[in-house]
Length: 223
Image (cartoon, rainbow, N blue to C red):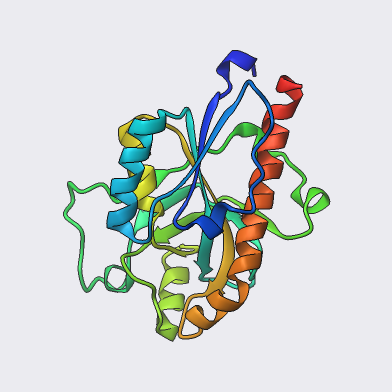
């Protein structure tokens, strides 16, 4: 890939500052890094992302944060998940108790650089990294035991509270968006307690993975 085709302005965002504070900005005059937070939830993150895109006009948006896992064997606690897609969902949607209008966008694809697909994560990082799959974006945290089963039965890796708003805003601006998520909890009644216990390490691992992926993506061309 030619240097001219590389994104030169990157906006790294999280829902709260703790999610992106472990990330160390590259010291390279050819890349501009901006960091910002969106706030928690679908509405706050949608409004904030639009404002941030207008302010910084980035070439690439990367979201780092924590997420809940629907399958703790495949997406274990403190591991990192890089989804290829997100869908708007929730327990009532998954059980067909409610539905979205057909004309309403509910599914978006993340930008996944080709260079990331062939990276030997097991050799490079001290934690598990899974690339691919779909994460559900929901209005509220699922806390019933059967919610986890519903996610698995519908082919979803886990859930998140903001990411659909963020990628929807980026899509409307035609700006590529990627997500790098640390697994902080398992979906179910234990979710909040696990989140308090594992979130710091999960968020740190997500930022470390982002640091590694961006270094691999950029440094050969920018050195």
